[in-house]
Every structure is written in structure tokens, then in C-alpha cells.
Length: 64
Image (cartoon, rainbow, N blue to C red; front, side, top):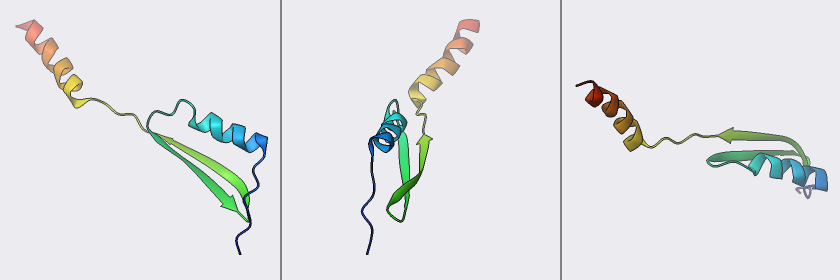
């Protein structure tokens, strides 16, 4: 039977630190024997393709 996860204030603060400021991404919490042993944060950066096209077109148009 699975053990209940032990969460104290320190772990809650660590998890909150990883989630705060994360716009796109994920936070993975690894648990072994009912205890948190690792927190992984993966952050993604999203770019607007419309803005990228406009920025590459604009300099070429100004050279004409």
C-alpha cells in the first residue's frame, strides 16, 4: 500500500519557488517511499511567429 506523502512547510516553499514565475513549462515532483526526493523544473519559451516574420521583413524593406 502506498505511503502518504510527507509535506512540511519547507517542501511547500520549495515547490512554490519552482512554480512562481513559470509562464510555460512544468514542475515534476519525484516521490520515493512517501517522501519528496527531487523537484525538476522545465521552462519553455514561446515565440510569436508573426512577430518574427515582421522583424525579418522590416529591415529588408528599409534598405530599398
